[in-house]
Amino acid sequence: MKTISAAALTDTVAQLCIKANTSLPQDVAAALVSFRQAEPWPLAKETLGLLEDNLTLAKEKNLPICQDTGMACVFVELGQDVHMEGDFEQAIHEGVRQGYGEGYLRKSIVADPLRRVNTGDNTPAAITVRLVPGDQCRITVAPKGFGSENMSRLGMLKPADGVEGVKKFVIETVKLAGPNPCPPTVLGIGIGGSFDKVAALAKHALLRPLDECNPDPYYAALEQELLEEINALGIGPQGFGGKTTCLGLAIETAPTHVAGLPVAVNVSCHVTRRASAVL
Image (cartoon, rainbow, N blue to C red):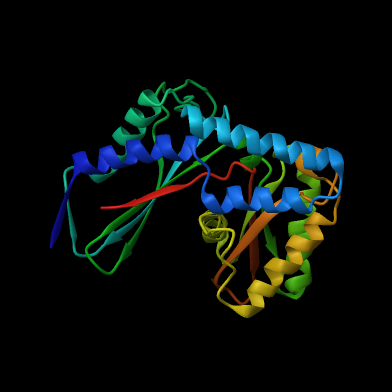
């Protein structure tokens, strides 16, 4: 059995908070470059170029890519043969506290949703844990800004709505969002499960690299079809028009009840951040 100390977990989370906020994942950065090269609308192409310049400067100067350094969403794949020494959740919260302090990252979390008092250190983190076989602990920090989060939607469709109903819901979500989520966007789409499960599926879908399609050919084809339809809407980068409204999307599914067809769309901006490490 492998033992991991709370201190090691805290240090890792702190480093990942800084890395995720200052350096965009390679797959997202590469998608920006690819779409800029293919974009025919001059204003859209210029806008995408400015976004690329911002990414370069942020990485070079170790500064946040975006002023909204997000809610710290921490995903943990915890091996069943791992023994955690210390308080697991408190170690993660402390890592966020240290990372957002040391990295001079904006603190955006309020302790109560209605009384709105800032916690001052961006804690607590939103922690998701999945037990897996083995003796490793894989941690992913995915800071989530709320300009895009606020554009997300969940619908409890009827089974008769079928795939066309799902497609309509996704496209409608993008249209309603318009320029608000700072496009080009990345979409995480959940289908199936229950009311709570489908939202978790959509959030988790944002962790999949943009250059990886769904392993099921049926859903891989649906991802490509939706991407093409969304980019034909003409919203474009920052809402200035063009063919680059969405950089990519990922679908995750789960079994569901015979009487239901839940669907959720978690909208993310072009600054879709994530950084991972294995202990």
